[in-house]
Length: 335
Image (cartoon, rainbow, N blue to C red; front, side, top):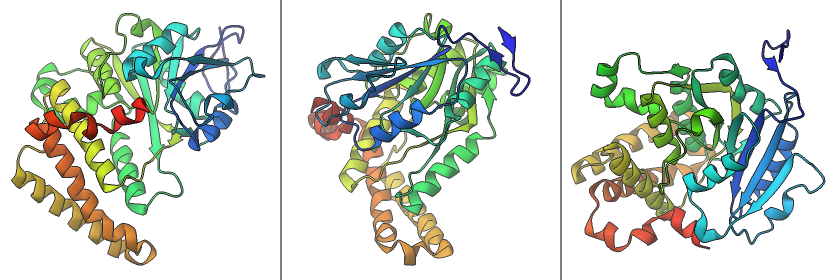
């Protein structure tokens, strides 16, 4: 191993890849085509391989995995065997790299330096167990979606590296705990030696954040790479928004004890507050003229979000009876 004077990162032999990029996919078109193209173009002299795990795609996604590029490997599994944590653990077991990076099939590296910047904190500090990168909305996203994503990650820029230095503050302050365990496998990279002791939990949702919580509480550090950027965003229908919010609230209640929407009063109050904010943004930035449909829909989207949060938070009879229909994730992976 030697030092590169240009970027001050260690240089490894490319005979064995330093990084394994693991991409679970299920019917990932059209975005998956661009993901494969951009991963192929990564400038990373230390060497990387790409492991694509397909769980029953019927849209031609697996045919996009290059057969003439030795860096790529395709693994096929049955749809019923997919699990967010379980499938990623399979990828890490198959990986030859010291570090294992993850992308989802609709998270596209924005440039050729995505991987280099994602790995950088792991090379600079051997106490960092995992790194996650920044997201930006796709070009066709509404300005509301782009604003929400940009605002979220701008706030995280104040926390480039976290570890528990004050156990009392961590245990007493929910906001601190939420920042410390926020982690996104849409674009992330972990240290395989840490994974061997702390593999991904086999849960339905939020496996990435639960893993981050475990390693943070085990004494490791977690990093955020602002310069490692992917495009990733969704424009949900109102029902899809209810589904997505239900899954998030249910997971956060079960795994972390958080109540995202505890009461009906909170539901309507939060929907009104966020809608007032969004309408103000629409007038301030001219979105009410440039994106009138999105502006009209936004209050309904905010209400749908809180309805999903409420059902997931309170584990109602409705949720217990219609849990499969409420879970967008289960429906997608059952196809």
